[in-house]
Length: 343
Image (cartoon, rainbow, N blue to C red; front, side, top):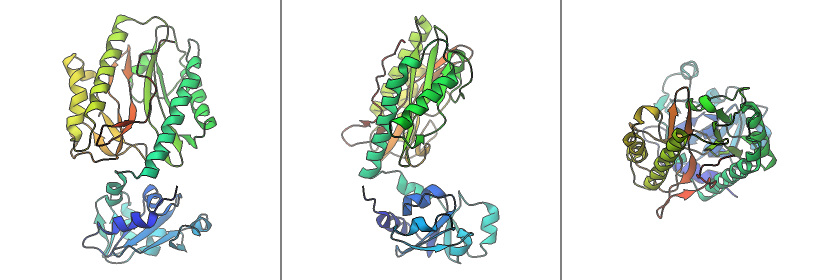
């Protein structure tokens, strides 16, 4: 894969208005524009598309083959800032902004706007990250059994993703058994899984900087009628959300397609988060799907669909896939079955 970072910088330059250049300091945005993965770097992109990169001594050797002018500096923002330059207002601290002096112009998130639509190389990396996640889940499903703890399952799952080629987990995996399933972002504990539990697993692989995200809920042993009822409900809501995912659709409209299924079943108050979010170099990035979200989806946007029903003190169900919007219908990247697995 040969990512055209110069073209990405040219695309950013084309968005500039009223400034001579933009100083990009958010690490993931610097990586997107240059290929440099670091904790201390900045890139100045001028209106004519030319650019200069600054980073400290720990990373300067990594810039040699990036095809961009690079300078060594500890104060990377100060090294590149000048009057008439725009900055990423959402990511720069007030302290750094005040040090840069007069004439610096706060700008809206422009790089994030570019990152929404993914190129073929990015989608292929996400496809691989999702395939690793799918396979890891299949490989460790036999470990999800009564007596195992949430932490143990999380460790086994994360280790398997790395064995299959992941850089590391895309985020701290969620394993929530029984009553803990009512907490959408539960952190795994030493609670032992029990027969009759619903167990929610939310996880993903990080592959070459790109994040997969998927959730499956499984059952241990014989399940109760209420558990089957909410599982089937969430599955129907998730299917409706996936079917509404298309270029040109409004974010709130997609959320409503899924949420209305849950509301009609009398569980409106048990679905308390947005329907989904973009994925890429970050696990949560634009666009976001929710009742108050605005904007329309474009073609080639990787995004999750993850409705859930959460019953406090009893348990919950969430089903999540990563998909890519396409003109002919969304491409499903996480392909593990949505049928209820009874283990």
